[in-house]
Length: 133
Picture 1 (cartoon, rainbow, N blue to C red):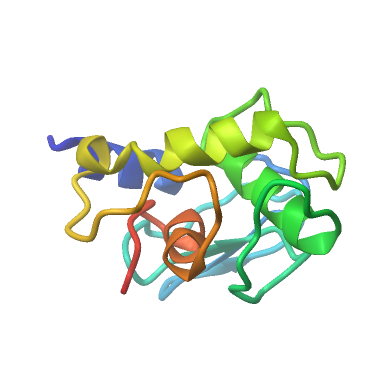
Picture 2: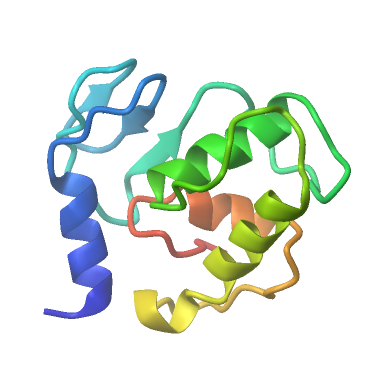
């Protein structure tokens, strides 16, 4: 089983994440209920704080940063605190997530610069962790 398939399977497994929204072809789950959607490119994940794709980087604060922090926590970066500030810890976590492309088996690479651009937003929100365009 490829690493990308393993990641997709882990998203399919039952999670309990407060405030997480998962939308897919098979189901929509909101709040702190278990996530049981089929993982894959057609599934999107959101924490409900921000739905855009504006450039988000170190020094920023507010809803965009809360969304980044929540999505990183969902992806397994537990050391990221939800404090509305894009500090050094968030920067490092984003850069690490971006450099994780080869392990996920993504066809489209991310630029590992620690800045959340539209492509990184897409990867953080996708069911399999890969950018869509």
